[in-house]
Length: 180
Image (cartoon, rainbow, N blue to C red; front, side, top):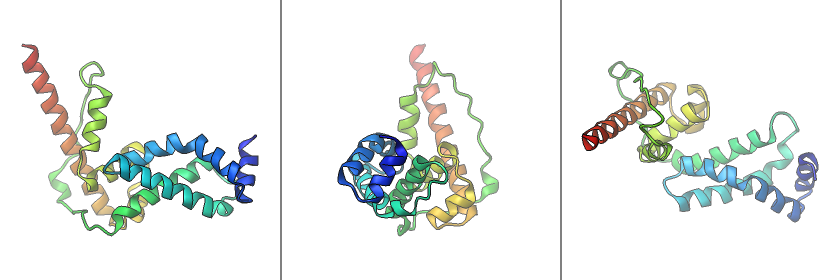
């Protein structure tokens, strides 16, 4: 069954089509939920809530643009809604933080270490970092999604980058000491 036909069947609230759509995209969308969640359980809950929203709003999809992109935006927004009421974004002096340049040799640092370092960032920094650096949203879009100012988005991104740079430098220094 083509994606267009599957979407059409989901718009008719066909349970089997919804199940097929879920199986087709749940893995990829779960990965997004994990990026923006504090833990596995929260990511599972967000995925379920996201699919409920997708099925409830599928009539609004008008075959313009990528259907997968439309679903991704819903899932990201659903996951972030859990944090919108929390006031944990902070504004820091942007002049204090320059964009750190981090040169990484693929052989020195594993992708697992990088992913763990990103996951370990405080919520406010991880969300902005993921939205900006990994998913390509602008600071204006991030500000709208998280209900913060553009300045808060920029400063939280700068702080996330600074923390990641420190973690990477510490990791590299620790490994150099161990190899001596």
